[in-house]
Amino acid sequence: MYYADKFDLREIYEALHRCYPIDMYHAPSSQNRSEKLTSIIVDNIHNRKCFELWEQFTDELALESNKEIIGTTYGNAPSVSSFIVLDTTTVGSSTRSKQLHFMISLVGSFYTVIGEDKNTVKEHGGTFESTNYLVVSPEYEFETLFVWLCQKIENRFTNFRFVPYEVYSQTMKHFNLDSFLSVFQGLFNDLIDINTKNIIGNDFFKSEVWIAKEYTNQGKWTIMPPPTIN
Image 1 (spheres, rainbow, N blue to C red):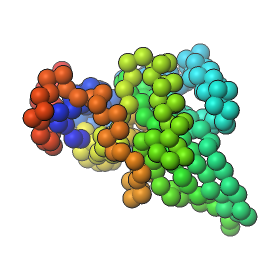
Image 2 (image 1 turned 90 degrees about the horizontal axis):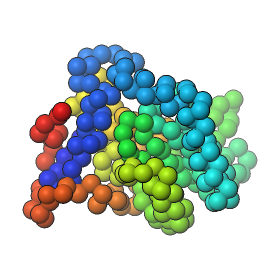
Image 3 (image 1 turned 60 degrees about the horizontal axis):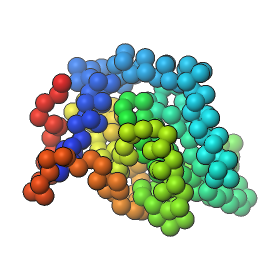
C-alpha cells in the first residue's frame, strides 16, 4: 500500500494490520483474518439491533432521495453497504443500470462511494454481469447524488473519512501474499470489480482529508508502510 510524506495513511495501515495480521502470511485464504475482525463483524452485522441502525439510515436516504436503495451487506464482509439505483434500462434479456454504491467500513473510521455503470444479461439459464465503467468522484449523472451522499454519511458517521480510489485500489502485499487482497477488499467488500480498466473521475478525490499535519509541500511518494506500528 502506498504511503507518502504528504499523506498520512497510518490509520488505514494499522487498522488493516489489526484485522489481517502479518503472522497469517502463509495461512489459507479462509483464515486470513483475525479473531478481532470476526468479532467486529458478528457484533455489527449479526447483531440485529446494531444492523437495524444501518437499515434506518438507508431508509432515510431512500425517502429523501426518492430513489430505490438496495442493501448489499453480507455476513463475512468487513463493512455495511448498499447502493442507490440511479437508472435502469431493460431491452429483452439485457439490463443496463447505473448504481451508486456506498460502504461504511467496520475495520476503522472509513467509508467510500463508487458509481457503477453495469450490464446484466439473463440467458441460457444464467445471469451474467459486466462493468462498463466506475465513477470514483462526483462526475456527470452521478455528481449530485455523489456529493449529497458523502455529506449524509459524514453527518451520520462522525469522523469517518473518505478513502479515495488511489488508496483502496492498492494490493495488501505486506499483509497476505496468499490471497493478494486489495485494500478495498480489506476495508469494504469484494462486490465491485475495482480492477476494471474504465475509471472516470479523480483518483485522489477527498485525499486532502489524509494530508499529514506536518506536511510542508516537500513530500515525495515512497512505496513502504509507515515506519512504526503500535
